[in-house]
Image (cartoon, rainbow, N blue to C red; front, side):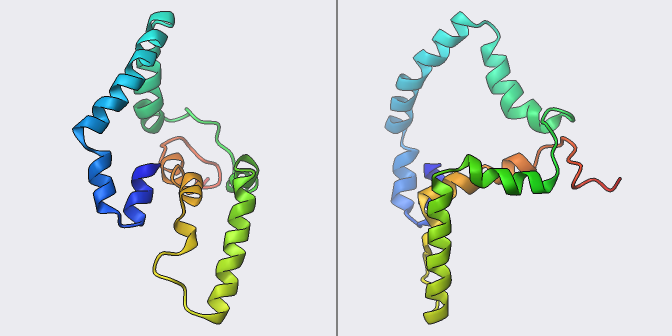
Length: 137
């Protein structure tokens, strides 16, 4: 989430700091014990979480619950509440501003909240699972 926002905002030093070895080590020191404890409590967790959820899910057919396209258009704003309300307000503000002047170089739509809602979209749509709304049959 933070990396796409830094890239959109063109904060290159922030990207470098985010990928600094000390930052990565701090992340590992905080996260690794939790993953180890979960693996000890639930054998097979690593395979399920890292392999199944991050790789097989996109490579196999039939993993996800396929729904028509309108389902996601209707459900996504509900799942993103209350941020979707903020997004509507930001969109309305952009429309009003566009009528008066040209939009700024870095629009409000590039905020972390907006990226939080839209960053997962390409990953969800790139799965090889069949989607009835996109099939030719």
